[in-house]
Length: 355
Image (cartoon, rainbow, N blue to C red; front, side, top):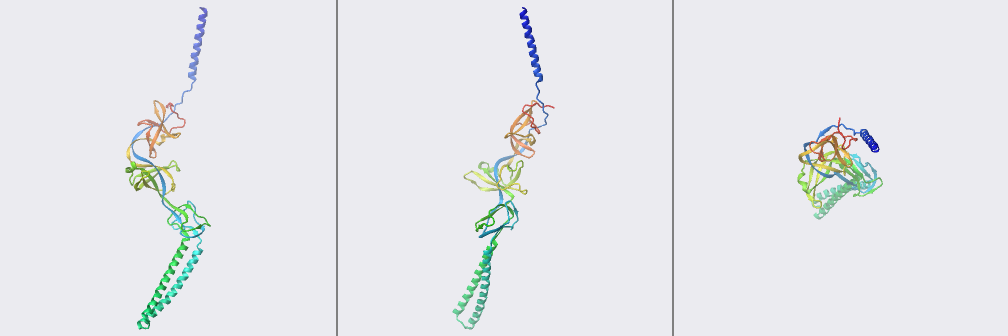
């Protein structure tokens, strides 16, 4: 009996120690820090209905300028990216040979004029002789033909002067319109022919946005509609344009319609050839919206925190139309959900919310 009582005493003492140890452990376990947040409710508003497309920016006018003459390049006046005025000199060719040809043609004209003057004087004399019956009609017609031939010879030499002048003028290659040099294709010493490309000139303000609209969506696209787009080369910025031109046919191979929008580009940020992601506004409808200040990146996804049952809840969202300070949210939250404004990096899913 004494042994059993001693054993029981040891058992109760051990149990008491164990309970005290568990309580001590619980008391020492750190509590999760509460976070203070500001929230805003998910709202429903009338929002633009947009058709997401991809497009390419093109120059409003693009010209690959050719030499239109034969000769060696002796000087270039432009570089890639340079803005130039209409009529500005781009390239100068060696025109010494053409200049000599022009001098020869001018000399031929002077000679032909002298000969024509002499022939005209002779024809006038023959007129007088014919009126007096001093010569036959046959003799008169022969001299008249000689005068006509001389007049034609003068016209030929004058045409040669015009051609030689054109060759000299073509040796100076000028810009047909004001724009930007996209490419210079020749350097000093190159020998060019009339078909040789010397430079590419573009007009980059405004630009044209080339879109391809799938056949089932063609009826939604009309002239005057607004488009907004972004370019990966210029992150964080949205640009706008207006639908201006529609193709007259659907392309048989791709079953789509080519549409062009006009895009102002006074600042020159956008460049021809850029690939862009486009939102084409085709109407209005109800949609859920949240402030952009509630959205943050989680890997490749966009996310927000909502507050539910006193805790933060991480929600991955699918965004739609961007209207600057607010953005459409197509999935991930419901109307009325309280979303956290200005979420901080230290916030975590499940964290307690409190003062």
